[in-house]
Image 1 (cartoon, helix red, strand yellow):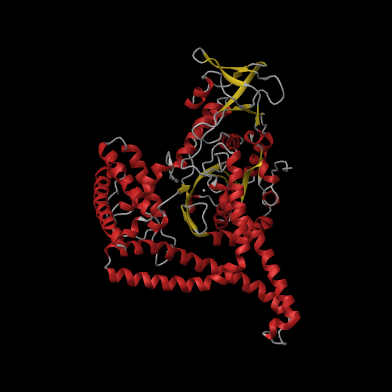
Image 2 (image 1 turned 90 degrees about the horizontal axis):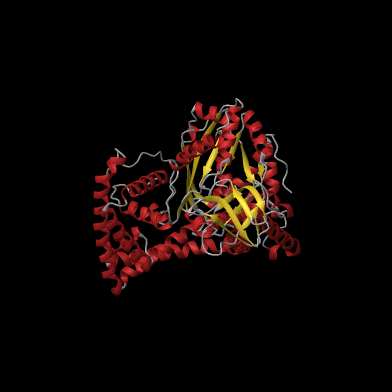
Length: 606
């Protein structure tokens, strides 16, 4: 059972203990996390962090907690009430001072009968039913009706008045095309219902924490997801901000873009970008105080959405996102190893340019050519930058192949001990994360593949099982030590306690070494296929043709960007990169950032 929302700020020492326990897991899981605009967060006073897209479930909150700790700010997260019932998450969230929020979507139940619009043209707010019991349990004024998932989304409509078992008046007429399609078809549609949720206690807790100059964090999309675009923002964030301002509390609303490269994969990368605080005109606060709540809340939500759009990369679909990535790689630049923050800014600019000019015949033609090129690359199993190997001579390719195979063999030997020792945790983490993914996907109306929960459960399972596994190995080693001094290999002068302490030091080191060496080994393994293709007589011509095609596409992209780009960005040209401060880049000798950022660029508490 989730605790009642409390006005108490998180305990500093408990908060720090939890953060310090999980920080190593974040360091190990992510290869690199860059921060942009951290100076925009006020050092004191009330702050609301608005983070999106929420692409990595509980990991998002841990990443932001670590970053904010460097600014000496502790976050009071708003977290779904159902998460407090989870075995590990719940107690940790309570100790960290999270605020439980009950969501209507968590109490959705399948309802009896079908629904339809009685008069779509004359009065689209009147909902009729066939075999329904609107006056029965589960239905109440202020409650919500959820339609079946269509085009990857479930439409919600709210109840204003119940007129009988087969008639309801809605608060607002449905306008979404998907909703109208379902509610006007012959026979209507099945549906689900959720009760009204009173959030008074939540708002009061947030108001009090802000009054104490606290920092409140929220993911305003309402839950984690793995889509390429942001979900519509929930009104709660605007009500919290305007309610606090109306009470005289000065609040800064800071947008945070959670931008991931391969969000759910081990050793992925991320860029966390803080935007300028959202400006709230005095007349918006006055409207909120004078009863014009819907107008003022809607206006602020729009401002927050635009602020988040400025620090994230959101595409309408996966295909558009992949097209933008391919275009960036083709854009001619003298510098190739780019900081992630620069890659992020380029993606954002190219996406804006594509959205602005997508109807231009030149863009349409070039888009088709790039899509065809990337499809051919996928069929061959190649990355864009690997076409450069086709320029090598047969001797150069053979030498490079032998060198990399030799290096891979040495890395495999170094990886094997740690891999064998830690394999139970690897298997358990993978199995558990995939099971949780299936469960999350089955219960969600917005997730595409459920990848947003994978990283969380990989970290949680590994973090819990690893100490148990090390303890088991320490016990086995101690028993072996007492039995025959490890076949006489350990001198009698070495005490038993030293063996146990050594086990807790050596086994984690072996595990970490296996992770790092294995990471380098995988990078080398991925580079072998294009080298083998270069030695295949049947593939040489294909690779040469693709290389020439890439050169031509690169020329066209550069020319078009330099022609249209300055209209959107005055500093747009092929010799000048978008300004971005480089924090650090960790790139192995056998990979480039183009290799790392060529798929699934998704933006980061459910």
